[in-house]
Length: 295
Image 1 (cartoon, rainbow, N blue to C red):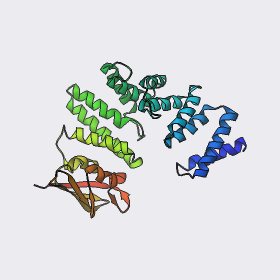
Image 2 (image 1 turned 30 degrees about the vertical axis):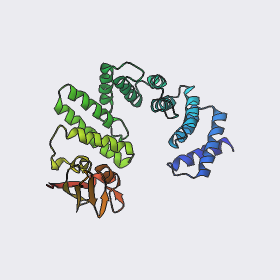
Image 3 (image 1 turned 120 degrees about the horizontal axis):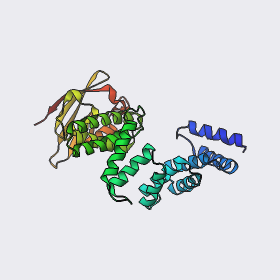
């Protein structure tokens, strides 16, 4: 294999967007090893580590991230921070996580994790002043973003909590609505399960502060609405639909939509489809019209 062929193999692999065969993965790893050996560029070390990370082969991800980090390659420092923060290889090491994230101080993702470490006292002493300063700085940097993968939703959720603690309920509500809106767009782009967990937190916190206004509701507000026995009438692409929630004798919830049953609001939001499209991946097509509570 020549260097040119290795470059071409890598380019073809990235165009697969994760939809690759075992043979294509093998060729990619062989090409990566050649490029690492011949060029010594940390980019190829990190990229190989990133593929292993995505495949949950964390020991190999660690190996190649560490190789790239020896060149102070910034994405590798972040990757190592995440590996040690979450204990991907079996051991949580907040000291190492803090050191790697600190190397990338000023990066949104690094500062977000550093903020959480100050909030929770991971390796460092709990420091609400530093936590608040980092979150406020992050918000000023991401509030006008149009990139749904940026940390705006997570930052809004944390800053809303801070503002609520300061007694500014109005600003907390504004932040919750802002972050919830961006997160809805992100879920339409990336239905990662963690994004649904964050959305549930948004909805729960929002409706602990304000009353439901059907005119302002979207499909994600079902996290709150379906907790009570009710019938939700909504339009999807201009056509009418209903979803019904009932409480069983044992206290569990049963949700019926389009002749299918769901166990929880979360189950409904992650799985419910119309014409093969998950509702939450086309949330902009959904318009809540009425909510009837069942007594």
